[in-house]
Length: 260
Picture 1: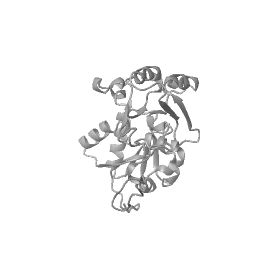
Picture 2: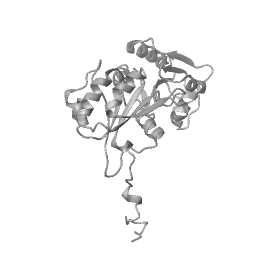
Picture 3: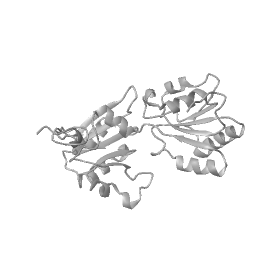
Picture 4: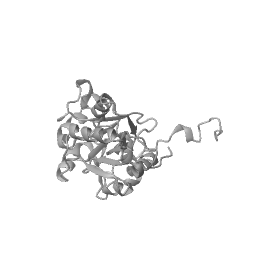
């Protein structure tokens, strides 16, 4: 994507800013930030350093105190004034970012938009923990979910139902309901299953605790965590000698003969 200031068309660019570390932006996101006329961003969730990439004359609009309707009317008005707008979301726009409503209303208003993916917290967590969340013979699925709180979760996606799979389970937006979450997880996961409690991933004050599942709520409450917390519940966090068969010396494939 070769962008310069002169050929960025009037549109809304919904950009994933990643979990906190400004260097985890995609190159495409960075180019858009460098060129856009207007930046609309969630000021409590997106680091200020990211805004240092923007043009000095760009209009910067924080949204922490705005409703979705107010944000949309600003974006629509700017695009109709022939301006390019970056709508900067934390993490990846495809997860828990309320872009479904925004895209629907932008389309209704006949405002062109594009979506640029970002790194999600679960990916940043795995990188920091130096684990792969899919380990052959141990776990091969990742579930990204949240517990039912202010936003209802469909009955078919109740946490206890998902826990039955014993997959690598990444729990977003659930710190306020952690006691309930722990009880539901314990119905299916062994109580010593490791849980990584990840607070403000990618930010300077990032903290990660690894505790057994039966201490998940106690640790959360002790550290007074209520937001910007991701839980990774997974057998992949256990010290394991499991190796991928692909690179195992006993495994023959096209480019490597077995050594026995």
